[in-house]
Amino acid sequence: MTIAQPTEAALTFREGMSRLGAAVTLLTSDGPAGRQGMTASAVVSVTDSPPTLIVCVNRGIRCHDLFVENAVLAVNVLGGRHQDLSRRFASKDIGDRFEGADWVTLATGAPVLNDAEVVFDCRIVDVRSVGSHSVLTCEVDAVKLHSDQPQGLIWFGRHFHHLEAHVAR
Image (cartoon, rainbow, N blue to C red; front, side, top):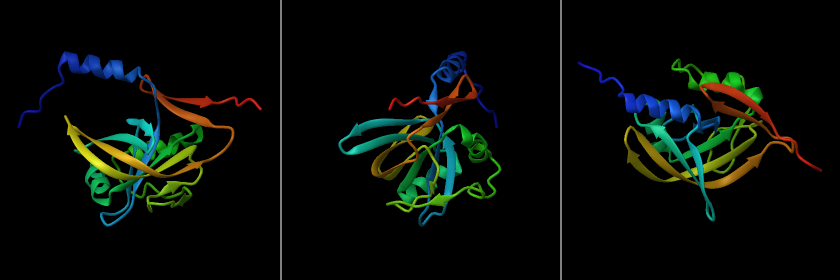
């Protein structure tokens, strides 16, 4: 079997995308297909009426089919203190990714990281295939905010960066 190597255009595209900073999230789900999660940065807001997100997931990973079958997921937006947890959920070594963190549930039953900066608890209402990924349209059933002093974890230039908001009072 021959594995195709990325073209120069694909490599340039990947390098360009590494310069498009994105929030680091944990996508988590639980239901008939089981409990699983992964680290992701491909999450986009669509509309606030009804509150809807788009989440992109590679069809070749274990979580993909589980998310689709469970038809629910939580988008846990991480802060700087979650960098190690993010790495654990990104690892190919499955193990118990959920161990050692405080998890609760909201409306859908998907695992919610209790101290995530914000959580969007969603129902998957549409799945579209685009290239190697599925685009999951997710309607938000519940939102949980963590604090009035938000911190962010951003993936930019193939490295983590920590952000802190300065909220005027």
